[in-house]
Length: 78
Image (cartoon, rainbow, N blue to C red; front, side, top):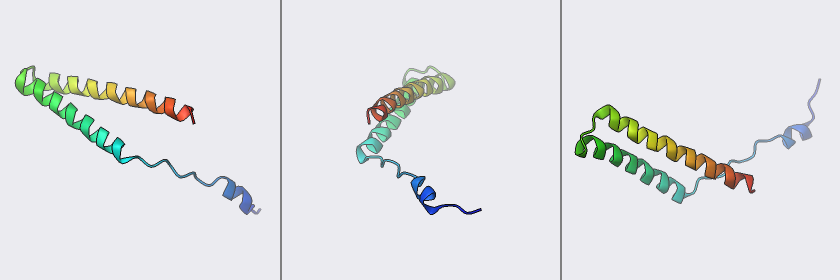
């Protein structure tokens, strides 16, 4: 049994879109803000270590949800 080369070439992997430098900077700023939010709640508001982790993790997951929705909308327009 042989495989036709044209079939293999038709199914080559498509190069993924590169992440822009502005996107990487935005992710780094968001991560720094989440760490700052954790430290603010833990050290300034004195709400407890676990509560501060939960609050910053919840904010991080909400941010990831927003990013995924925006990415899905942008990708569906292409």
